[in-house]
Length: 103
Image (cartoon, rainbow, N blue to C red; front, side, top):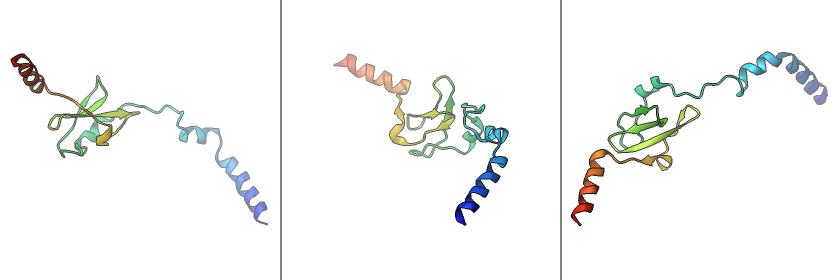
């Protein structure tokens, strides 16, 4: 009894899930991997709670306040602090260079 109902359901599903329907929901369809900059209005750095800016060249979200860059993978920002990289600002580089020359 159950197997007949299951086969009937599968047969109905085949007519519903035709090629054009599957193509609309397929991940191989034309999915854009670009970052949607409109979400910058609501995204903040999970560490400092400060706004983020988008760096198109490196495809990263940068928090200038804390000096952290978060990667964007397939158009999705990865805001996990352990996966972020620490960036140095120009003022930090200058201070590091000046201490090296003094010693």
